[in-house]
Amino acid sequence: MRYIRTVSTDSDDWSTRHSVLATARRAAALVNALSGDRPDPADVADVADVLRAYGETDPLDLTAHDVAGMRTAAALLRQVFAAEHADAAAAVLNRLLQEHTGPLRLTSHSGSTPWHPHVDRDDDGPWDEWLLASSCLALAVLVWDRQHPPGRICASPSCDNVFITQGSGQERRYCSRRCATRERVAAHRRAHAGG
Ligand SMILES: [Zn+2]
Image 1: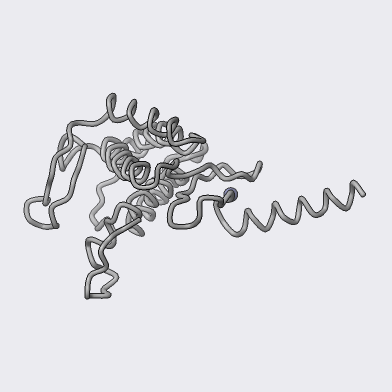
Image 2: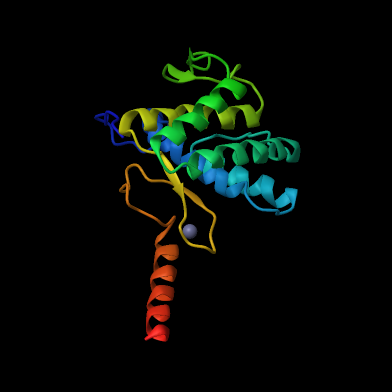
């Protein structure tokens, strides 16, 4: 993904933390944190940790009710990661944008950030709407930029994490080095057991 590196190397730089690629990676991290059937109290802390790791600042005001809504949004976003071709990813994103977001608008959050695009309906809207809108916008720009699906579901049968492929090689099949190593070892064992 292209973004202009500023003269400052300050890791707190707003534009770097909120680049399209950083926003897409945040979407993947939240989809992963919001998957599964863990009880709500643990989820709120987990999700808050992910939000802070991607630059959201306290107080987050995140409740179990918010997280329940975000889990529904994450399930919808997972469909983008399941798309195997750009056409399929675009079709899913068009449907989500049509059904769940408002029109494209610019905001500076009352002068506290640089101007940037949003497709949620309000700066102070609910967390589930924010997750869906910010994620759809970033994932749509990645499809536009590379003409490939923006991400994938991990190819390991024992893992259902999603990840962003762009910026890390289109051919990457696993969410992490850990999954890649586990599957390589398993394939090696199968080959030897068969021979
Ligand atoms: Zn994995």
